[in-house]
Structure formats: structure tokens, C-alpha cells
Length: 319
Length: 177
Image 1: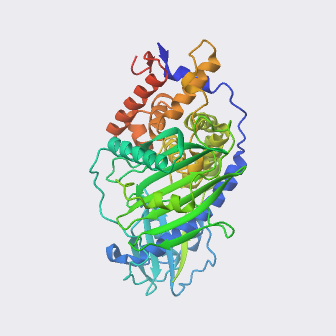
Image 2 (image 1 turned 45 degrees about the vertical axis):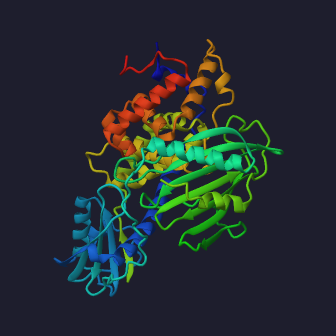
Image 3 (image 1 turned 90 degrees about the horizontal axis):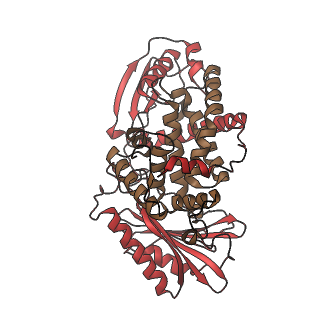
């Protein structure tokens, strides 16, 4: 009998020294917190557009205490105990911490004697509460949901995930061989995302390596639903790269772009966002991922851009 | 309307606690990351991302929160997110299918690494959480954001696949032995 853990230990035999410097991590962490602040501020703006679902609580202030607030505010561009017209504060924290921060803010006098406190819908996981605290009359009047992404219909699986994976894999192989390409390796489609059973669909991802005259390359497809989560576009939209967004006649949105992954590695992406919430990302790379990876020369891009777009538009890539 | 974000900062005591935690746990995180992705450079990137996220979340952690659980969850999510990038697709180790199972430990490493790489990313994460990171079913479910039933089924599938790929029906875990 062999124990899995014992065998996993053997994989670590050639462990190189760790490069991590805690100081660098702390510096990066501070930077990340500043970025997060900015992102939360943006999320609050979006949330404010959808106030119809929020509860608005008028709150009376109990007086000023600037010192207690300075502990919690980071950074405060213009700290002043005088209420600023048209100013709102966002508090993002677990419920208890949010209540504490809210109390400190109200005591500071920054939002005046009367403030509007609104709990905004939070898109973050976990138990964070997002509060918007505005001086009187400053709260945005949310009547438009224009900036909210479409929620899409609730998703219900109509096939077993294994069956979906098998069907998508067979279809990709059919399409690729139909284009006259020689498949040398197949990575079966698999259900990969982290929301398998919380009422969300997962995404399915698979790819094939192909052999052509100049070497090896790869074609992959990822199918998901936007109701799960925003789909990260994998094209690199720099000014000097091909990157376009096109509205298709059926209402779909097509994006194309490319990523230079280094050492001459290029990945082209065609991504179609369909009206029903399905998103198909078709990618082709000029290098293989299978057994030939690293040992065989790169090929050219195996598909033309039109062929790649056709793959992304293929209605059979769905679930 | 002008927004000002109110965020609880990190106190010196918090930062010291974070530094102590990161110093003492980064090696273990790094090994788990390596087993997940099979590449030390990528493992270092994953650990860096995980610790940075942990730093951001540190002041908000309630006393009941175990940083280990948060770090484990973050590491797994960083890994799964990276897998969505097409240029991060894994390449199975060359020669896997023809690799004879010999007494040379390097042969065994090659086999197991290749077998892990053949597992879907989530199954790999599940089996490593359970049998490398010693996570309970409930802890693994928390890290993966799924039910305990899903953890059990993913674990069973992963072990079944590993036994087949390694041609080692005797492959056991402490739990199953």
C-alpha cells in the first residue's frame, strides 16, 4: 500500500528557496488596500444607482468626536468636522465593525446633525455590509439601473455536468477536425469554477493541441454564464494590439483581442456574450499545452480570426 | 456627490501579527501552492497573491476567524482563477503514459505530478485540501465554496482517477486505510 500523502511529500524534494520578503508583501498589501478602496467607492456608486432595494435610515447625530474617527478613516483627503455639502461616505465592513465605524462617523460631525444612512447591496462574498452615509440631501436619488449589468434569468441545469462536458468536448473535436487540423492531445472539458452548487452554473473549459506544418499549437473553448460572475476578458486590449468590440445582429457582443504571453507565445481570443447570458471564449495559441509543450517548436496560429470567431459564435457551445 | 471611503486601517499590533503569521505559514502555503500548480514560480505568485489578500483582510478578521481558513480559501481561489487564463493551461508531463513505475523516486515523482495535472483543477484542489492540507470535509467545502457532499464526490472521483492513472489500486489515504 502506498499513502498519497507520502507520495506528495516526494514531489517537494527539489524545493527551491522561497523568494518572499515579508516587507514586500506588506508594501504590496498596502497598495492593494488602496486599490480596494477605489474599487469599493466605484461599487458604492453602482449600488447607489439601485437604491430601490435598499433601506434608507435617517440617523440623528450625537455630537462630534474627531479623534475617534481619525483612527478609522484611511485616507481622508480633507478631514474636517464641518459637514461638507454633497459628500457621502462608504463603509465596508462586517456588520459589527460597520456599526462601530458608522457611530464614529456620525460622532465626527462630518455628515452633519442629520445624515442619511443606506445599506447598499453588496456584491462581495461573505458577510460584509456596505453602508452609504450622506450629509442631508446629498444621497444620490437612484432611479436608473442602467449601470447595473443584466442579472439574466436564473440558471437551471438541464443536463448533468458530466454530460455537458462530454458533449462540449466532442463538439470541439468535431469542429477542429472539420477544419482539417490534426489533433495531437485533448484536455477533456471539465467543470471548474468554485460555485458548483450554490444555484449558479459553473464554467466548462477544454482544449486540444493540433499539429501543423510549422509545429504545434492549441485551440481551447470556455463556456460559462454571466449569471455566475463577470467573465474576465482574456484579450489584452493595449493600443497596439488587435482588440475590438462589436455588436452582432442577434444582440450578442463579440470581443476579440490577443495576449502576448512571453517568449513569442501569442494567444488570440474571440469572446461572444450572448443575450441569454452564455459567454463563449474561444482561444488559440501558437504553442501546445499537451505532451509536446516545451519540447516542440511553436506553430502558427492554427485558425484565422474568422474561424476563431465562428467557434465562439457556434450555438452548440452552450449548456 | 463626492464619496469618501471609510476603511479601518491596520494598527501596528495588527501588522506585527500579520508579519508573524506570514513568516510562519508561507512555507506551508507555498508547498500547497506548488502541489496545486506544479510550478515553483507560479506557486510563488499564488502565495504572494494570497498573502497580499490576507493582509488587506487582516484588520477585519473577527477573533473567531482562523487566518488559516482564509488563507487556504484564498489560495484555492487564486489557483482556480488562474486556471481560467488560457496561457495557464497545464501541460501534462511529457512521457506520462509510457513512464514505467520503477524504484527510482524520480520516476514516481514524474508519475504522480503528471497524474495530478490530469485532474480537473477543482478535483485536484479538493484532494490536496483533504489529504495534503489536512482539511476536514467541512473546511474543504468552505475553501471551495461548495457543499460537503460536493467535496466528498469530488474527492472520490479524484482518488478513483489517481488510482487509475498511477496504476496503483493500492493507493490509499490515511482516512481510507
